[in-house]
Structure formats: structure tokens, C-alpha cells
Amino acid sequence: MQEEYRRKCFLYKWRIENFDFCEQKTGEQLESPLFFIGTSPKTSWRLWLYPRGEDDGEYISCYLFRAEGGPEVMDIDFELSVAVGEQLVKPPVSFEKIYSFKICQKEGEKSFALRREISLRKPFWEERCTLTIECRIFKRDGDRFEIAEHFGRTTVAKERISGMDVFDNVTDLNAESNKDIEVKTLLDIYPLISINLSHCEEFIIIKIQPKRNEKIKFAICKITVIKNWERISPMEYVRSWVGEIKTDVWRCDVPLLAGTAKQHIINAQKTFFLHYDFAYSTGIEYSNNELNDYGADLWLENISLFKSSCEKTQTKESTDYLTLMDALTPSYRSKSFTDVVIETKTTVFLAHKAVLRARSSELAEMLKANPEAITLDNYRDDIIRRFLLFLYTDCVEDLYCQVAIDLYKMANKYKVEFLKKKCSRFLEKNCDAKNVSQLLLLADNFQDLPLKIHFMKYIVAHDEEVFNTDEWQEFVDNNWLLAEKCMLLKYEKYEKKFPIL
Image 1: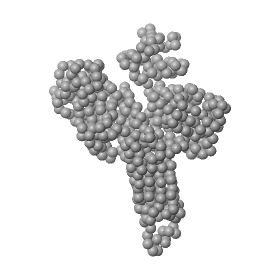
Image 2: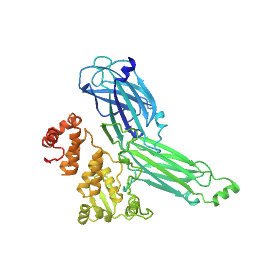
Image 3: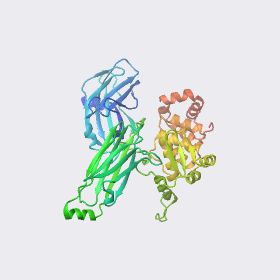
């Protein structure tokens, strides 16, 4: 009987991508998307996670939170578990009691799991850290919950910048040496941080200094020093900041031996390599519920900020030749010979007129009016950065549903049809019952008939799921004529011909 009771439950899986880049400090919570239990559709729930603990930064804290709606009190039992990727960090913990949940009440555990148990499994420079929290909810009395699984996902947006400098011979190690390495995003003029190197006696002094980082909520920097004149393992230094980045100094030991050995070292080429890996988050989060469980290793369209997302078509001819896009990519990354600036409300990007003219007829017209600068103040900086990347490389980075919508609008505005098509395909693949009404309105507003037909067909095929969502009800209230067309397609069986478009 107990086993049967445990099986009949409501399961909610919440996956948090880039968990290690959460900005929340001790006492601050991250909230899951709202979810509803089948037999109690009026009562909404959330999971609350304190990434750095409710009052102890050594732990994460986890709670089930009743948000609003429904009866005054709901009696339930529940259990929580947490995993990193596919590795279980803490098995299901049942609190073995019935909780009488009132509205705005949370129950769970402050010292739910040690943070170091999570960080040991996924160092930031190796791969993305996806934390999965499972919450099973049981009901002992009355109507049991129907067996159901629901899924939510929160993605903490992050960006990563890496590079390497080579320092040759003794001239780079003398006492007068003072070298600044600027760490900045692609196409940005101003650095986020600088890494300053100087030499004093038997040490290289490495100083990390903040430059332009008022928007950064969490950052981490890993510095690796490799000395070619010593057969020792590379030296590594890792520093992280929650909130404001502050100046940090690291003394790296580089002793020179005495006597003959010292003379040999001085005469030899003392090359050393400094590699930096800087990653940060500005606190932007994307949250949504999903119809299916896409797993812990989802990376939509296999797109990442840290890997090229270009899909290259294989042909029978040799691929040893340099393509046009291959040739343009270094120009994009190095910003060499740039001759025009793109200004936003907060940032300046560097670009090449020839590329802008070739890829966009609209930008070409803007350059005729002002050959020195273009102002784009109606779009977020991260959207403009992705847009420019595409103009140079035909690649799209870090694509999410809202980002795809914004890029679609920008591609339409500046007549970049290939980018518009890529965004359309992405939105077609990633529409669901909750976002399809928003996407249909997008297609209708931009008179994109093929995209509009796709979303209307989706609504017809998934009518019960779509029509029961809050998003659809809001859509009907504000766009009743378009909603009526969708319903006619279902109830008058016009799916194939779509005569009312």
C-alpha cells in the first residue's frame, strides 16, 4: 500500500542551466516557473532555491512554495532531490509528514545540499552546470493526484571570454615590465577587466582590475601560467566575485637559479604563456515550463556562446580552401581595419562598412546618410551583438525563444532574409502550447504567411492543450478575430485549405 501511494504522485522537474552563475546572494532565492497540480488547477506552486543558502553560504536551500489560488488550506506530503547533470547529489528526501499549506507558505530544508558537492562535479571552465531539482507531491486523503510529470527550465545567461598572451625572453620579465591585457567581448571597444603583469624579484605579479562591469552580477576568472624553462605543471589561479568585481592580486613564483644554472636560465629563452578564461553573468534569466523532458544537457540548436554554431554544408569538393565566411571571421573577431561605429544607448560596436553594405540593403542606406556611425537604440546590446556576429559568420549564438523573436524582428527590419529564415525555423521547432499564441501574433504582425500557417496548424493539432492555457485566454481577449480563425479551423475542419487566412 505504501509503495502504491509513493507511485501515485505529481512530479515536477526543474532544471537550472548555468546554475554556477546564479547572482543570488545568501538569503536571496531563485524561483521556478509557476506550475499547477492536475486535480487542483486553481492553486499555483513554485520551487524556491537559495543558491547560496537562506542563511548559510555553505549550503543550498530548497523549498516548495504555495503561491496563490485554491482552498484556504491544502494537505500534502512531498519529497525533494537534486542532481547535477545526470549525477545525483542528494537522493529524494521525504519529510514524512503532512503539511497544511496556506497561501504564501513554504516548506523544505535550509541545509539541503552542500555547495561544494555541486561545484566539484562541474567546474565552470569545463562545461555548463545544469542543476535538476525534482519535487514529488503526494496526497494521502481524498482524491489522489493523477500520475503526471511537468517540467520547468531556467537558464542563467552567461558569456565567456578567453585568450592567451606569450611573453618572450628576459625583456618581458625585467623590473620595468608592465603589461596590460584587456578582456572584452567581441566588437566592444571598452574592456570589462584588465589583467596587469609586472615582474619583481622572483615573482610575476598579476593584478586583475575592474574596468566597465556595472552590469555584471557574477563573474569568475581562471588564469593559467605555463613556463617553458621549467618542467613543472602549469600554475592556476581562480577568483570569483558575487556582485561588484574588485581588484585582486596574485603573485606567481618564477625563481631564477644561482650560479651557472642561473646564467644558463638567463641565456635561454624564458618564454611563458598566460591563458585567461573569464566568464560572467549580468543576471538575465530565461524561465519557462516545457511539455516534454529535454534532459539536463539541452542546448537549443546546439548553440553556445563558447562554440561556433555554424552549420557547414558538406560537398564532394575539397574543404581545404578558404571560404568567404572563413576569411571574414578573423576580421570580426580581431576588429582590425574597422571603419564605422554602431552606437546604442549604452555601448559602441566596431564594424566594417563593406560587410554591412553587402549583408543589408537597409544598413547600406543608413551608411549613405552617415558614413561614420549608425545608431541602433531600439534593440538590446546582446541582440545587436548576435546580429553583427551573423552578418560576419552566418552563425547565431546562444539562441533562446525570446532572443529568436528579437532577432527575427531585427532581421525583418534590416532585410537580412537568411537570418530571418533561421529564426523562423527555430521558432517552428520550439513552439509549445504556452508560447504558440505569442508566436502566431508575431507571424501575423509581420505578414509571414508560411510561419503563420505553421502555428495555426500547431494550434489545430494541440487544441485542448493550447485552449486551456492562460496565455491563450489573454490572446483571445486582445486578438479575438485571429483567435476565432484558429477555432474555425478546428471546428469547421478547414485544416488543409486554410481559406480564411
